[in-house]
Image (tube, rainbow over all chains, first blue to last red; front, side, top):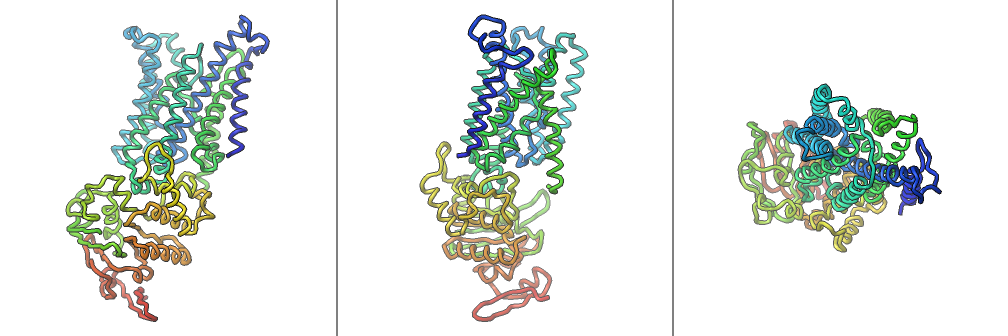
Length: 324
Length: 251
């Protein structure tokens, strides 16, 4: 067994336990069991927020890992598939329509951003199928086009929306973990468990695809069909995260690199590292986001992008230098 | 075990293969040769079920190839493309065990039979030292060896190889040729697409010469150097010595 895995698991558990005490206002552990504002902040705001962050980070990172196998490229992520702008466009449409969609209640923007993320992924998938190329190039180029299109939609609606709605739209533009209570956290934790379970069940198929379509088909796997269903699955899980936390960039890209090298090529260890590191990274980034510039809270998506973008460039340069 | 009648394939309007006939028995070793673009790789992909024929018939073990499910076909045929696509890290042992995929069921891990097949393959191909390596860090020769072992572990009667010796140094090429010969003696039917006439002529029992999508020759091995001259447009020489017969390009 990999000793480092246990160490990382222990560190992430420690992080989850400590984070809710920290922030602009530190919480005194002695205040937890009494009815104080501090205990409210701990139990109802920060703890569910840490759990939600962990679940969201875990799902995003695992989605990145699987995306790499589907595209056979370690720079492929759901970020590139227009998920972010799709989700934001969905949310903006819902905010604009909210008067007319009273029946959907508060869930409106969440539902619509989920549908928007889903639409973006499936659109790119349809384009890739049309040109019969699942290369990263196809993905990137169609992703760029779709991002521009959805961004234009967002700007149009921003002009139409009133000020308060424009502000609440910010969450779907930059990504932020804002919750009160446990519903979202428990929901995403359950999704993470389901996602991890599915990834483990289909580890053989993912390995076959990662070894090439010729290799996979010659072993009896219908590569095209599996890839199609895997995409739908990815869209659902990533869409759920984006609809609750907005588009949080770079977790899906950065984490699998680390987890692949620490996982020593073993699928189970790699998946475990991916979830632990993805969850831990997002919890840490969220802690930074809400404590660095008091009294302001920076959206967590800004922090992950600030950290992730340079990492992405370093990675890209290293690959280009190796001539890949 | 393999019967091909009037096989044709077109890519769009352009005919790639026309009216190919081919008969292979279980103990045959077929060498397919021809110039670049003659349709050799397309033929392999048709036989592997990776492409659908435009016209004609391919019968494998008495059954039409189109009637096999993908999984069933994977228990009969293994296809090794010219270049592998290992662009993500994975263990050699996982690559080998993937050969057992057509026999696995969804929720179960490898069975005892799978592990036995893996062990037999590892022993036969001498891969003990490579098992826990990342397949990406292997040399070209080692990768080819691993892929051939994966086809062996897949336990199929028919193995199709596209240019198995490309990019290999002479030592590795000889090693791989010996392994192929071993598989053939062990009862596998082998189809090799290759320009390496020198290496594969001695192993072949049958030959198929392709020229612009048509079969210039399809039948038992023949040492007629005219055939090789016709196909490649350069002179070839036959050398017989010590009970061995070689065909080499005459430069």
